[in-house]
Image 1 (spheres, rainbow, N blue to C red):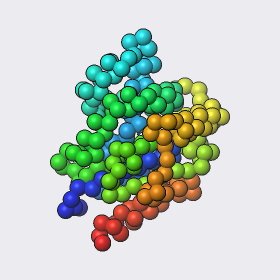
Image 2: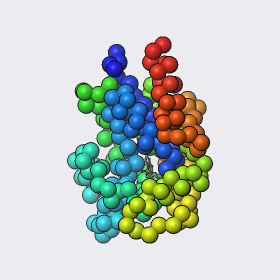
Image 3: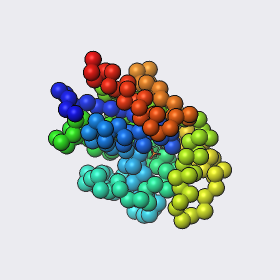
Amino acid sequence: MRFKNKIKIAIDSPAAAGAGTQAKLISKHFNLFYLDTGKIYRLIAYIKMAQPKKYNYALIKKKMSKLNMKDLQNKKLLSDEVGTMASIISKDKKIRKLVHAFQIKSAYHPPKKYNGSCLDGRDITYKIIPDADFKFFITANTNTRALRRYKELKGSSKKISFNDILKSVKKRDKSDYNRKVSPLKKTQDSILINTTNLTKRACFLKIKQIMDRKLKA
Ligand code: C5P
């Protein structure tokens, strides 16, 4: 499938709502360049955790100027601890500014072979791609999100309890929704997708149907 113009999809969501899964499915289906923007904040968090004494603005600025997609594939970025630290460092306005350029380039100038771009995060619909062709706010109730994250992480070597994951999802929600800089919010022009009672496939079909309707109009 080819489009006359490149398309841009912006997705915002709270932690573990299934946005990443949907963004990947949609990107594959429509041949879009996908960027999980949370991974960039996770990478910065990981650097801070691995080198707490060296961590400073200049170091991150240098790392961000050389950032590439491979840097974001490190499995260690997926841990709950890194996610929690990401929600702390992402409150810093100066740090957020450093990662904007990479996100904007990915959204507006994806590699030529793609039909466009799809980014997910917390401030994509109103800060990074305010003129996106499609905006979605993907969410699910807190217990469902915690259970999904628990199942995802259970396979890893560390001992993990559901209650700890539930606590950390709630903590992250509180921080992401209430922070002063670029808080998580559903913009008026975003379509709400509640994945609580939907399978991955049903959710994908719902989003695809919304997109097909507009693309074929
Ligand atoms: O999406 P993910 O759970 O990987 O994001 C980790 C953290 O990074 C979030 O809890 C949030 O604090 C931060 N983040 C952000 N803005 C984005 C993406 C993620 O502040 N666009």
